[in-house]
Image 1: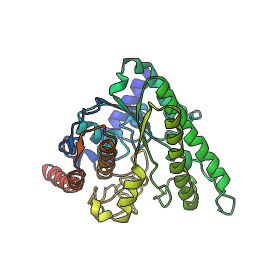
Image 2 (image 1 turned 120 degrees about the vertical axis):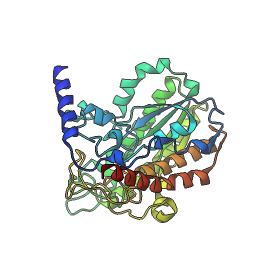
Image 3 (image 1 turned 60 degrees about the vertical axis):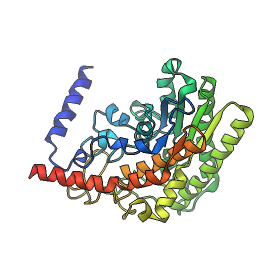
Length: 363
C-alpha cells in the first residue's frame, strides 16, 4: 500500500512538472453531452444502464489508473482514455441519460493475459471475473451489455501470421480468428446464464492499412490484417446466428463499427476529417513525443489522435452508429442521425475555439 501511494505521488509530481501541451486545453466542458438532443424515448425498452467490456477503443481510463498514469498520462490522453476526448460509450450514455459502467481496458485480449501484462491488462475473461460479483445488484432487464473487442488478438501477435519472406499463412490467421470469436461467444453465453438478455456486439474496424507507430513492435502485414478483419466479422455473424437458434430469448444486435469506420475512409470530408494517414499526437503510450513537443494544429481534423487510436470526433461518429443501431433494434424510441452527424462535425470548431481561448488566457 505504501509503495502504491509513493508511486502515485511520483507520477502526480511528474505530471505537475510537465511543461508541454495539455489535452485538457482543447476539450470543451461536458463534450460528452454533444448528442443529448438527438435521442427520443431512451427508456422505450426500459434500458437504464450500459455495461461495457472491451479494449482501448472503449477504455475510460482504467489502464491509466492501474499504472498510476505511467501509461496514458492525462496530460496527453484525455482522462487516461486512448483519445483526446470522450470515447463512444461516454457519448452514448450521456445521450440516453443512462448509467455507464465501463470495464474496458486498453490492450485487452479475448483470452487471459500472460504475466507480467496480467498485472495491469485485464483481458476479457478477467474483466468478467472482476465484475461478475456485482451482477447480482443489476436489474438485468434494464441493462444493455456492449462487447467490442478483438484487435489486440491480431495486432499484438507479432509475425506469427507470416512466413519468413512475409507471405500470409491463412490457416494461422483463421485459427486465431476461430479462437477469438469462440472466446467472445463464451462470454456472451456466460452473460446469458447470469440473466442478461440484451447485448450489443461490435464489429471490428478494418485493421489492414492502419497507421504504425515508429515505436511499435513487429506487427502483421496489411495482407494478414485485411484477412483477419474479414474473417473476424464473418465469424461474429455466425456466432450470433448460432446463439439465436439455441436461445430464442437472447437478443444480440450488432454495433456496426466496421461499417461507419469504412465510411469515414471513403468520404472523410463528410465526417469532418482532413488527415487520415498520421496522428495529431506523434509519441508513445507514456506521453513522450518523438519530436517537437506539440500537437497538430487541428486536433479533430486528424482522424487519429495516436497512431492506432481515433480522436474524440471519430468516437462521436462511432456513438452515432451505436445510437442508430439502438434505434433499429427498437431499444430507443427515435434517433436523428442527420442531426447527430452535424453535432459530431461541430466538435472540430468547438475544439479550435477552446484552444484559442486557452491560448489567450496564457498570453
